[in-house]
Image 1 (tube, rainbow, N blue to C red):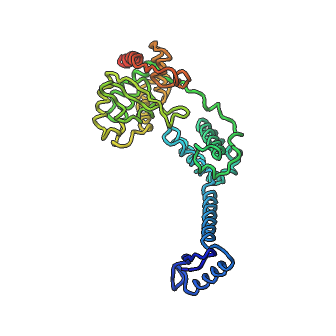
Image 2 (cartoon, helix red, strand yellow):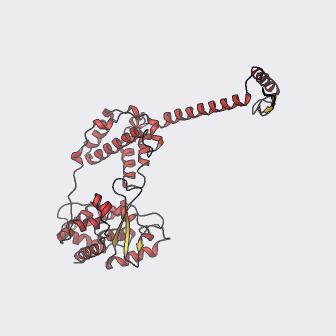
Image 3 (cartoon, rainbow, N blue to C red):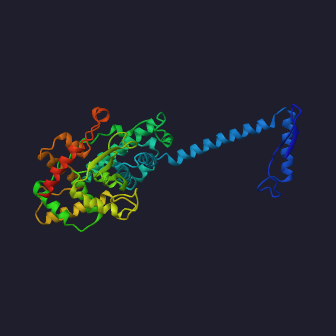
Length: 390
């Protein structure tokens, strides 16, 4: 300890260091005497030791923070790190896993030198090579999606310094130019799909699905169709608490669309008589109120890929039996099939939109139209279910 008299006559004791005869974890007596002499000279010169110590501590803190920021920039300034932060902002959305997987498979693995390059130095020509590899492999749609994800990541990093809603980590990349802006949009690979099952194909598919061995994927797929072609991802997100058994309704959370992640739209649908046994069976298997309604293990919701695999297997059986009139189909084609067939039944476009929860983002729907259309949805789904039964 160093004790001294301040200029105003008051006495003060300040800690110099811990004592350590080896001088490893503290000061030896000789080192302490030298430090005391330094303090004494400062006091004679009129220096306030307390203020000096406070100023030195503040300066050390600023220097440590600057070093930390520099280290963070050096370690996290890569293209891969930037994309990782961007992917983190997609958590909870369908695109989260898609974006992460596409970047890993088509950038990090085949082009590690580009992924490890500082994000601010990535050039459009390098991204062009990445996309060209995909297009040459016949994966134009994947190339278009990767270009869109990369463009969004760089755009977000450029806005981060002024947008307080974005992760602060994005400010560490010093991105001033978006290299993906110079790349063509590849719109030719993003054309809308038009595959829909014909009535004979739908009949064969439905018959095979109902005869498939009992499993969670089968229940989920049957539910998707009986509810008018719902998005599997939204249905698989449903919890036991989202089912109103007495009112015979089920609520899906629609997060598709801008700004819906934080405030998803509740998409309420009626449960038809044909669907009641499946819903009751699933409710009997859940472990709690917050448990997923469709799960193979109890706690984690069924994955969309599991349901897609079931569709693929049924499609393969149909192909081998000569039941396909227009070639292979996939899980996403079933939603289009449902809407196409409901239109053929005379169900209006507005009611189909209410059933499938699309096209409801306009001002009228968001702010003025508070009608739940439950009666109309029940009538429309009754027609649709009877069509499936036939």
